[in-house]
Length: 224
Image 1 (cartoon, helix red, strand yellow):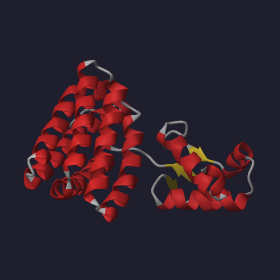
Image 2: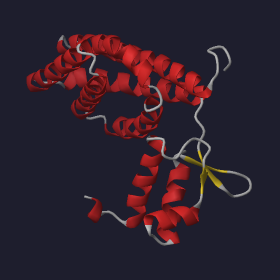
Image 3: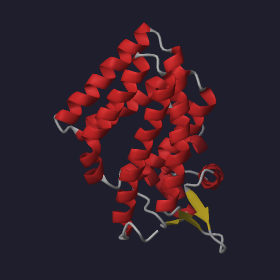
């Protein structure tokens, strides 16, 4: 796949992944010369990739013209999750209206996988099956604009998720039960309650993310 992409697109994806996985830490300087040497590329595609990353909020340009990796904050995570909750609620509601018997069977299988993984405390599997659950709803809903927006938001959320495995672990079983509830409403064709249950699921995830960021930044819950 990468061979079919232009150099600037590959650079964009690889640098973004460095930000998401923490190899490029919040507020770290981004030096073009060092990146050009690391990736063995010319300045033009690198600058195009950096401009795109800046536009999407992964990088920030300061008054002196230098680029830094964007900071993380409680305020940002709240904003991201609140927007995501509305979009995911819409997707879940629309998926409920459009799901056929095969879709429901597929979601039932994924839901069972989430529950089983949570009961065995297999945290990574809970996260991966949860992502599969949401992506399946995206496909069923046919809400293309919402799905594109969610793809961008979820990249940012992945950055926060990498910071706090302890809190993710503590939430695994409750998150699994929430997926079960969402599935139950969908399988009954109750699109309104399915959408509401999804919104609450995302907001509950937000509370976990807030604890993660507070711990990472060394602040107390009432400091923001």
